[in-house]
Length: 113
Image 1 (cartoon, rainbow, N blue to C red):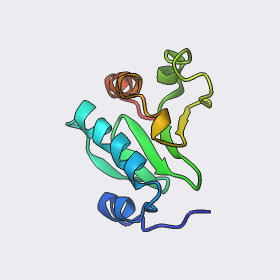
Image 2 (cartoon, rainbow, N blue to C red):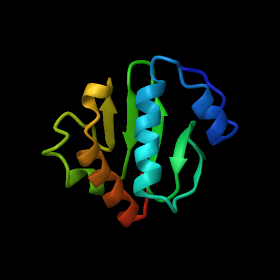
Image 3 (tube, rainbow, N blue to C red):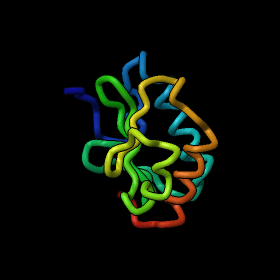
């Protein structure tokens, strides 16, 4: 289990392990660029982007949690996604266009995950 500081979004991000930081920051930057008015917080021990998604640095991957109704529209782009989770193991999995589309759809949906 990964233990990190959950007191604020800044503390959470600073505690992301060095080997995951580039991927985590790439996803976070894309989220903030795609949904600039969404506020960051902490929810369920993860970085929470209000009304949009949750973002977590897990032991072996970075997870993006969105509402299942949103993710259902992108199953062709993310065939290995879980019910509401997209897992990225490395920057090879980072497809900016596909991820931006999911983030934009999640922000428009507005119900979070």
